Image 1: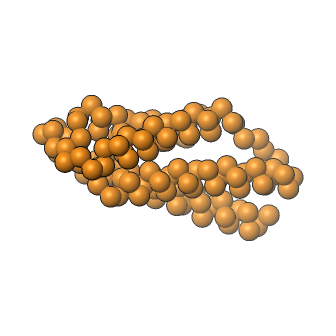
Image 2: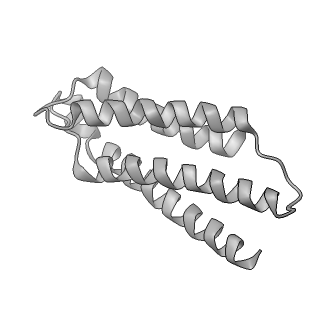
Image 3: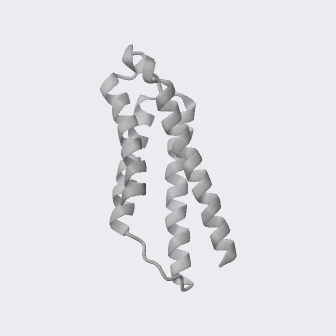
Length: 124
């Protein structure tokens, strides 16, 4: 079980780094967003992929721990909602990444959905 705990903790760190990269990329573009010239920067693309992949791996490690006798349950509804939100962010980031300027409502949606996913993780 110790290797699974180490794996889980390592994935949590990487997951947080991915979220920080995505949200940080958004925050650095807020002034540009107000001027209508915000762009999807590479940190946002890498961040959303990192958050998605590590999130899926975290669920896999949790399932594995349960199979080995860990005494907790996974809230699959929460995981599904968070997956849909991060998938929406991924789609927005991918479709907007090559544009010289992302429309303010679209760029704002990326930030709002990212923040919503963090809030879901903490408060649900």
